Length: 184
Ligand SMILES: Cc1cc2nc3c(=O)[nH]c(=O)nc-3n(C[C@H](O)[C@H](O)[C@H](O)COP(=O)(O)O)c2cc1C
Image 1 (cartoon, helix red, strand yellow):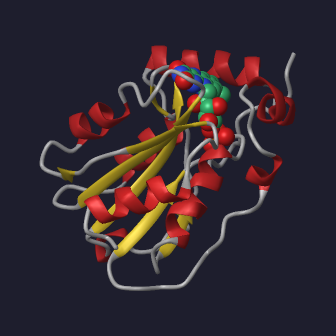
Image 2: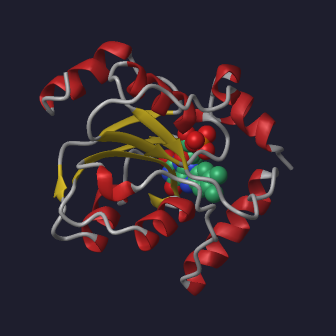
């Protein structure tokens, strides 16, 4: 049985630095980085993405955290997906309606957005916003994540996505993505 930390350090070659807490950073106009992370990879990528922009960053948290064990989390996630269940998320975020552009990050879970990000999509109205999806995965790629967002928000302006296997992203690739989307 793998603990969350073992999973992070070993199985998917993730970095210990990924456990650093989220930075609730400087403000700017109307761009926000929002993400969920179970074992730290997406948090690390989100911080790297936000660092290049002068923007807020917000971490989605679940009221009842997922288990530390990978296999238990996987079982629970599969069950939630089968039953169409979403976890309750903490409602301590900013007023999302104030932001016109949201960079939305998730780990890939079973080929899809993580359940907490699905819960976020369900709870807040993102229609009419510019959305830039980003994700970390274990080798399967971004899979259905962008389609999950598009299915929920057919009216949103969904721009190009960014993904990395674990934390194997390059800062220059993040900058390029920002430039492509005219954020830099
Ligand atoms: C429940 C669960 C399901 C996963 N499913 C996939 C998957 O379908 N494809 C994939 O490439 N990686 C999968 N992974 C690996 C994670 O996407 C990957 O380790 C990611 O970087 C973890 O991000 P985090 O540290 O922010 O939680 C899964 C991990 C978990 C915990």
